[in-house]
Length: 130
Image 1 (cartoon, rainbow, N blue to C red):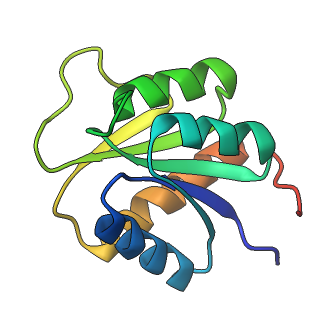
Image 2: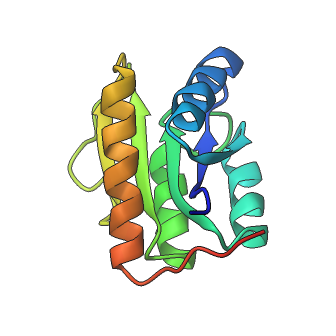
């Protein structure tokens, strides 16, 4: 079975490395980006991305902004938004996103990413091999 591809968007290199390790250990192919613009570039070039994991606070656009932009361009891709500082306010989360609070355990991360990937696949996105 081909590895399923997810994109991690996190400006803190240590947190990004932690997320990469957790998801790779679970068998995911993981792409990484430090900010929303880089993430959108990956999504434009990689039709195999099935889910995005993003922080709320990043340089430039927030994780909420990124999730809304992903929804406008790729409405079937699910987004997991994380923050240790802020909770989403009414209207922050587009329909393609879920929110989890930091700190979180690897099991919580993996569970939410698994649900996001399943939701994307159920929405009719077919992974491609690259």
